[in-house]
Structures are given as C-alpha cells and as structure tokens.
Length: 98
Image (cartoon, rainbow, N blue to C red; front, top):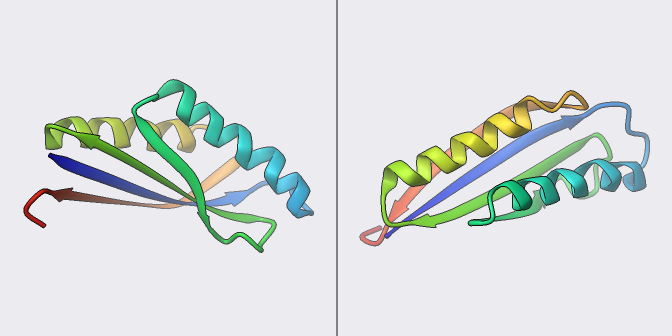
C-alpha cells in the first residue's frame, strides 16, 4: 500500500477578503474532488491570509506509479487555472514500511 501526499502553496489573484478567498478555494477543492474521486482534498494552511492558500491532496493506492500519476494530474489541474498562481508543490510518497 502506498500513500501519496501533495501540498500546494497557492497565491490567489485579486482577492481582498477571506470571503473572496473562500469563493476561489472552495470551487478549486470541489473540482479536484469531482475530477479525481479517489483523492482527499482540504485547505490545510494559510487560513488567516486572504491572498495565500495551502491545499493538501492525499491518495491511497496499491502502486507507487498510480499515486504519482494521480498527484501529478492534480498538480497540473491547479497550475493551469488562470485565477491563481501555483508557488510550490511538494510530493511525498509513503509505503506500509515507513
């Protein structure tokens, strides 16, 4: 069993309040969950900043290759959204021996 984790550090566009931030981040999370039903997604950091967000994505799979493939697809989907800028993406892969 393999567990893949992806942490995305995101800079939001023209956002001036936490309410506007939610209006950008919630649809992003919903889109990731809709396109990739096998992943768990949540806003995990920068909760009190209105122009930054950290989104965590996790997937469990029988193969390391499948974990990497799903996380790469999630990263690409976020990177190509025009209203946000992906500052960094950190991938981690754990197996049942870790």
